[in-house]
Length: 324
Image (cartoon, rainbow, N blue to C red; front, side, top):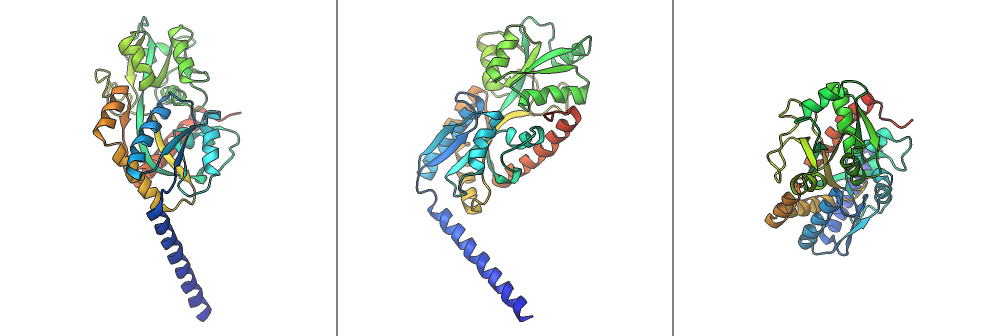
């Protein structure tokens, strides 16, 4: 009995010391520059959202927030760097859907899912389903019904497990479309494939698709796949509005940290990013590009990530998206 009580006291003291240490670290953090690893090339939606968050958070936290682009393997290269970094709040990942779906699809992964923990959402770029400007389809339903005839349609994606890949498989699994995903190395390549008539359509982030729609008139947009219309192009209806209630997906960016990072640091970081995403100048800039700033709390991002894992996991299994 005495030993048990002593063990409980020791455990309580240990937890108290660890808690005090974490609070002390958070009180001092950050004392040096913070590194945000972006697992994609510069110029894309994920990178642009990261830079806006970095600029705003830097002003709030009083330390430089440096962007480090580490593209490769659908975001796995950059994620692996952060998963194996010291959990001190100075090396963080600008995450995307791949941080959730890659382990479901890839044969092997260099780290376990729980090596990275959600911190805060930055924002999202709604996906836009597009076809060539001279295509005979005027809405998503026309496109889906036409795909069911004959051999079906080729649908460009930015690679296995990318958001366009999920869009195609959601339409196939949920609505009986006959879309054959054709993987390209990037969204810009798949966009070129649509413009060149090599494929019947694709789904691309609003920030990439809108210039081809608004300024150049080279694409015909059929629907946006997020739950709300795009602020920069409100005349385009959502897939949900067109009767595709299960087609809800976007190119989102958040921040994940290495497992073991003190919660107090994570909360401080989440609060800084949330504040940055609500700055009027930042909101105006991002919305003008077709990006919707989000921010929010750490608990909200954890809930979002858990829901996405369940939802996307069902599509992966139903569409047999796993690498052979």
